[in-house]
Length: 321
Image (cartoon, rainbow, N blue to C red; front, side, top):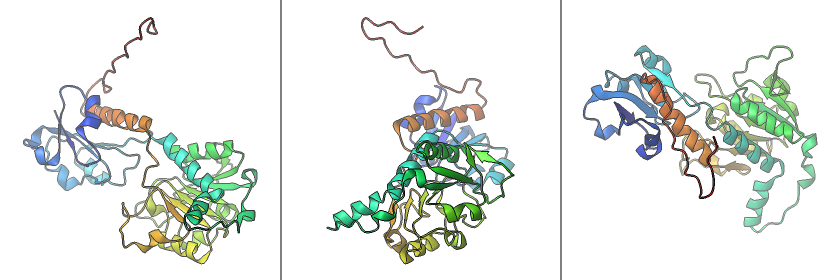
């Protein structure tokens, strides 16, 4: 059985140990018999239906990511192909990243570091910082990552409200991870920090468009650990430039890496990480284990997880029963 890896992020060394001995891993340039290809693993490069049609026996496409916005799901499923994502391998990491970035912005740490590198020792504005117990966080996204993010900010004593990334009005009394669900219009004016943690919304306008950004107080900050399309980047940079928004941290951008001529990336008060919110040793191990299991399930295997050898006992130790 042949597995095609269709994205340079994926390598045989990463996914291979989790596949059975009957699998052969190919790259696009090494496919000699398209009829043997049963599975494809891809990521941000996606995999179009036109490409899938080259492989008459293709059964499953797996995207090694939480989102499926890189794929044309209707077109692939119309070809009889099962599509899997890996939705929960990095819930802890992305919510940790949102927490770390949010806390840094709330305490103004990135700006202080930037000013110090420029030779400044500027404490102006510091009296405008808020005590965490007096801080309100709006988390946009009601999925796994949103819920984990809500729990972590609430654990620090902050007031947290949840907002649906779809823009749907909440049902009366609805909660997520202990936080009340509010409409965007109700949540934003009181927010000291907004965290974008929801799924992308293909075909829909950004949830943080110019009108939504105008609802925020000038001292507020925004963190995006989800998809760049959830925010109107031009409007956000304009708000930062005019002082209508204090700061923002983006782990995602609309073209990665950002183009050198993209002047938006040099907006004062805008800070970045290079789409690493998902990353940890544990998350990467889970990613390839779960992606390989999805391949094997899609190919019809009854036992999708490769056996893991027990570690050898240290001298004088017994292994647990």
